[in-house]
Amino acid sequence: ACVAHLHCPPLAVAAAAELAGAALNPSMDSWDQAPAAGVIEELTTAALARLVHPAAPAPDALITSGGTESNLVALLLARERAAGSPLRVVTGTNAHHSVHRAAWMLGLPAPTVVACDKGRIDPAALDRALTGLAGSPLLLVATAGTTDEGRIDPLPEIARIAERHTAQLHVDAAYGGPLLFSERLAPQLAGLEHAATVTFDLHKLGWQPVAAGVLAVADAAMLTPLSLRADYLNADDDTEAGLPDLLGRSIRTTRRPDALKMAVTFRALGRRGLGKLVEHCVRTAEE
Image (cartoon, rainbow, N blue to C red; front, side, top):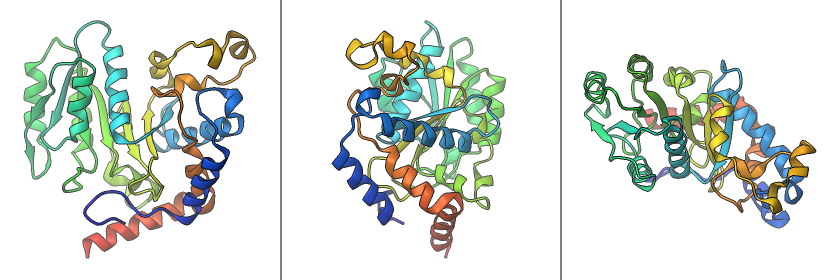
C-alpha cells in the first residue's frame, strides 16, 4: 500500500473521478455552485458516518483535507462544548503532532501527555492524569493506527476511563480507520463507536488521491458551531427553500468536490472490495 510514508497509490476509478471533479470545478461552499456535488457529498458522508457510528441515532461526517484538519476541527468542537472553561486535552506520547498543533492554534493549554506501553496509551497512566485534572473540561485523544508503528490504543478501556471521568473522547483513526471496511479486521477498532469524534483518512488505506479526509461525529448537532451566515453563499431565502447549507460543512470556504472520488470508489468496489484490499495490505505486512 505504501513505502516509508502513509499515502497509497490511488485506484484508477478514484483518479478518473478526481479528473472529472477538476474539469467540472464546483466549489463546495454554496448549493448553487455545486448542486450535484452537494448531493453526492451528503450521501457519502452519511454512509461514512454510519460506518463509524452504526448505533448512533443521528451521526454525521465532514469531508476534510486530511487528519490535521480533522483533528483541528475535533478539538474546536470539543472546545465549544466545554462552554467557557478552558478545555484540557490529554493524549499519549504516541499522538500525531497535529493534536499539539491544533491545541496551540485554538489557544488551548498544551496537551497533557501520558506514557505509552509498547506504543499504546497506558490506561493506568491515563487514569492518573485525568484524576489530576479533575474539575476541568477534558478531551481525551486516542490513536487508532500510530504513525510510526501502526499501533491501536486500547479503545474499549480508554472509553470506559473517559466515561468515568466525564471526558470527551476523540479518536485519531486517520491511519487505522479503514480497517472498518473489513468485517474480519473491524473488531480491532472495537470501542471506536464510543468516541464523540473520529478522524478517518481515505488517502491512506482508502486508495484515494490526496486529499480525502473525514471527520465523523456521533451527533450531527455537534456541528452547530461551524454554522456561518454569508448572504452571497447561504441567503435566508435559500435556507427557507430547504437548500443545504454547505458553508457550515467545513472550516474552509472554497473547497474541492472530494466526495466524488470517494463515492465513485464505493460504487465500484463497495465495502467488501475495499475490505479485501485492506486485508491484503495487512496480510502482506504480517508476512
